[in-house]
Image 1 (spheres, rainbow, N blue to C red):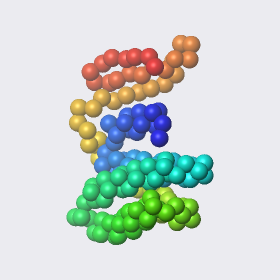
Image 2 (cartoon, rainbow, N blue to C red):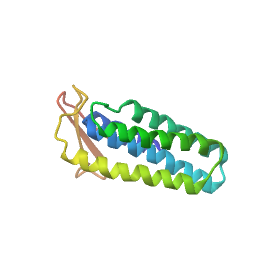
Image 3 (cartoon, helix red, strand yellow):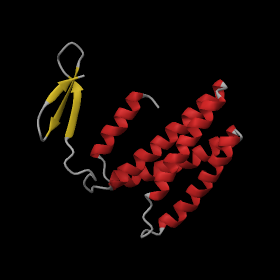
Image 4 (tube, rainbow, N blue to C red):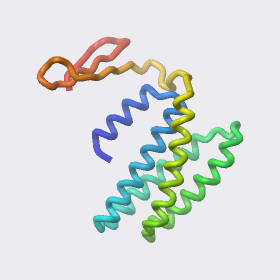
Length: 156
């Protein structure tokens, strides 16, 4: 994952509600899986295992965040446990077909969570986070970001 991607995810987290946090976490998981696929294709076995391990760590966070007051969580935990067990196997023995299968499963879940997040109008989970607006200005191609609430702006 690039530094720009980390920055983008960090910014999104500051503005996200619970549903959006789930979407972001799933996207990070899939980024690590994609990184593992790329490493496999380039023949970089050590980096492949590293990214599978990172995906596994993110999946652990996803599982820990489940709210078992919702019945769907009991179904999700079964899927996540299967994916986790598969990642453990894949970390030791690469199998691209199996990796792509679990990637597809998680992409399907991401689509479902995107629909939930689109209808969730609850406030962001981070209190006291500043709203950030970014856009190209009339300057010579520089980006001007402005924080609302607390003031200030800067050029990037």
